[in-house]
Length: 385
Image (cartoon, rainbow, N blue to C red; front, side, top):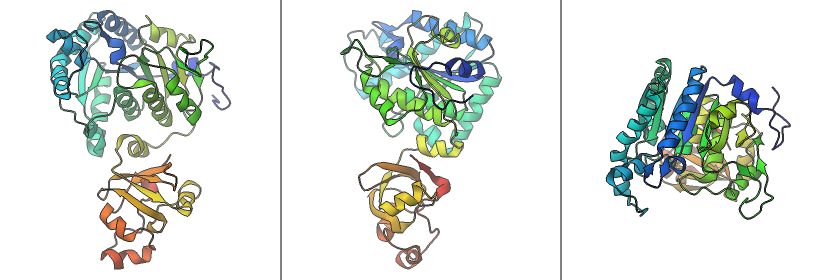
């Protein structure tokens, strides 16, 4: 099917991609699961019913779920809505995770489904071998006919280990297992062209052919009441999945039968079409999984060499080095205005790059006393943004 030329509001691609989907990731956030006194049992029951229906229809489904902290609060009787410290949050996640899984196990068990718990930190995906091991485990669980339930391991996660939010975790998992579709259920019914609260004439964007800067700018028009992600993180998650060749959907998670209605072709929520050219798996890992440890500022010639000529980054095009990083780390490549041009794996540490920036490749060995590579970032390890 040709997706080129579809406009926001054109729903002609939605049913096609739903019908061809064989594997999907459903992400549900705390904004949907959390009630006044902890977890919302009705929402969990509705979600299990929908997913079980899709599973019975032959789809492989992975559920990425928040809610452990909310479950922990309910179990400990914390219902006053007060802010909790990071240490308390980690403890509540440990208390609530078993409650969350118990509720899911009961809800899915009543529908004849077996679930499997998987807890992840960012480092589980940042290491390439562990990344592939997680993939193999998830695919095996799907082969067993289970419904894996994933969550970030909040009990041990620190800032360095966190995904930032479960929207990103869901998108990364969708790319990891090469899912056909990523569904993000939230408390906002769709993406709007303007703020619907301030402007009653705001129009819901039903279909997004491509996540452009204009689409990203609209993310500020739809406000989520709860949760850590917000609409912008959901748009960026959809963009990640689209780059991996999958479609994405953002819709109202409290709407009963939302998944069945989506697959029946109803016009609700916002649907994101996949990109025509699928990014390679390893480049998706570089672009979206790894956390950049520094930045390289490039001159105009180097920017053009990367973006228009498909070349590697050489030291002569580097104007400035920012941050402290080691060989093999991920770094951002920026133009003179600080706009991100690319991201990639660097062949030199920051200390050595400071010495050879702006220099010709013939000078590397003389300056450093060694030369393992001419390229600072080889084009095979470079992703244009």
